[in-house]
Length: 292
Length: 299
Image 1: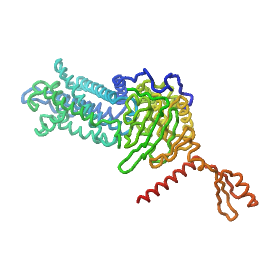
Image 2: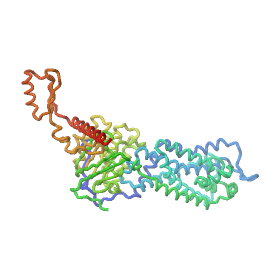
Image 3: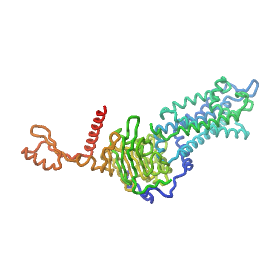
Image 4: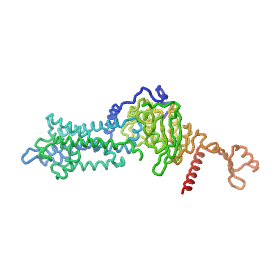
């Protein structure tokens, strides 16, 4: 350190409050946080492996493991699709859940534990800007993850993707709604782990169970009815169902609980969870546990 | 919202400040004013209430009693404008550190209305060679320098430093002191807590000693403990082998008279002027004894 390093060229430096110099706006700061958050995400090997690449790796494993077990058919005599093609929508839904819930719940809990949030809480950064940054991180990484999955599915795994614009419109709203819901639920869940170190151990098993009962790793139509009903209480089942409506042939609809895609209910369920997540985030988020 | 304060108003003002955790008072009625432009050092042993006090002023903790005002604003309700006028260096940052030193500082600079120049701050804390290094790869001392850099990047009017030089080697500590002096020349008000008395003596215009949540002494650093605590001690070994000690304002006279009496050079003769450390330890000891007495009286 050197004493000579600091200049006093700023004319308002010693005169107290700066008049006429405005703090950067909340939204502008939020946007600058997005770049910062995305950069730090891709520099953390844990996040990249367990959140970003995980669905891609699972798709590779499913495709390879079941490559010789024949197609999945919606009914006797009907035209089938490959196991990989059947799993693609579930893994897209899992990616949304991981990018939102798993990423943010662990990330924010760690930031709480290691003093990041305490430091930010002492700066003129609004929580609004902080959350714009986190949402941006979730959306940017979520979109890249989905793109990676789709490109790999089409090129590496030979899975045919839909060509109808309506299908892609459905994909767009299910994706945006699902990712936003996941992001809020991740913020809410981040207050559950008691320390940053325990965050992964608390969050990952909860989401793993959810993925098993919601039709990501197991074929949803093959699950017992009580498990399907239980899964219907949580948002992942609806994300997966919405994605199946996009990527599976129409005649697969008969395998759903009501023998239809029920996109209206997908929207309702995700919106309800979005509101729950928003309220819980608002109630539980603090820069620090103020009087712990 | 108008957050201006008259120039004469103190930067920090506390009246009867209290922080109660259950039956324990971590901060037990502190009255103190810190003037604008002043550097004030809070001294005290671990657990004395230094950090609790400073965290109340930073807005991190809520007081349970008394008044507090920081740059004219109640820190329990400090908004973003207020936060842009203060700088905080916490006790320890352990962030995962995926960013580089320069990226981190540039990002934080962007949060403030009139930040310092990023490269200038990097140079001021001596991290030029680490500017492109990820934070995770810094040593403990380098991380501490980054903490200080993040605390001053927003060009604060008031800077809080909680044990800023813990873990610094002597040279780094001296460089840090130079940096703080240059901030002081700019008119920055500084409140620091420290274990190191030499640090308080080097930097502080005034210092206060906190023990048991109470401010037991406040004053110019070279006047702490009062004149009485600074009375020199003359010590020597008497003919019968016992150590003799006299506290006196006129040590030369005593030395002369002892020499005359003994008729020879007194053995192990010393004239001791209590150092700041001696005075501080005396105060801590005296206050500890007091606390025990009152506790016994209550029991």
